[in-house]
Length: 215
Image (cartoon, rainbow, N blue to C red; front, side):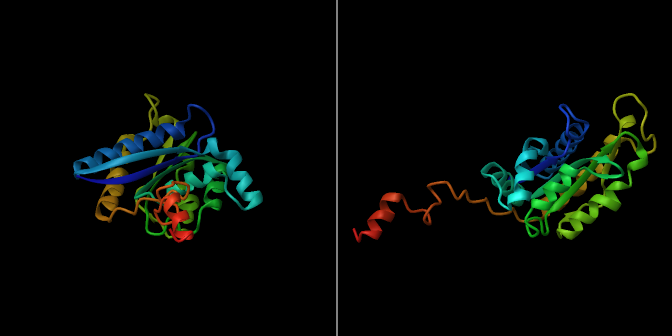
């Protein structure tokens, strides 16, 4: 059984948040789909609210903090990405856009992405296609055709889309992402520049000092 890394990025502002709830439903469906294809998925979930100050500092200074750099490295090494943003004022949240702004423009080239969004009413469901999808087109990511929008009425027994219920939309999008991820060769494991095992081309400090002194 092969293995893939799935990174989930959610831009919800509250705890708990409906964005995180949707992200968890999507990632669970993707894991199940990949398991059916004999592929193991390792999931890393990132809540952007925990990086809000780091993201803003990066915008102002031009440099990421160590924890933000580590998070961005995880995103860049993903075999597949699940992103969920709340919809505010008919578009993605400012926190989500800040995350996009600090990403290396080449980091997601060719990476399969499943886009999710949530808002109070279904009137904002087109925001996925007119607002969020163009961001990933700019980044040359491979966004799957089905985006999943969840309105408040889609949760629990409040009603929702009777023609294509939320779980059916989730399963369809997860199948598309699972297929795209399984067909691709796993991306290389990221190298931690602060890991002694990778420092100096894998040489220990003793060997490096010995080499410099001619021993």
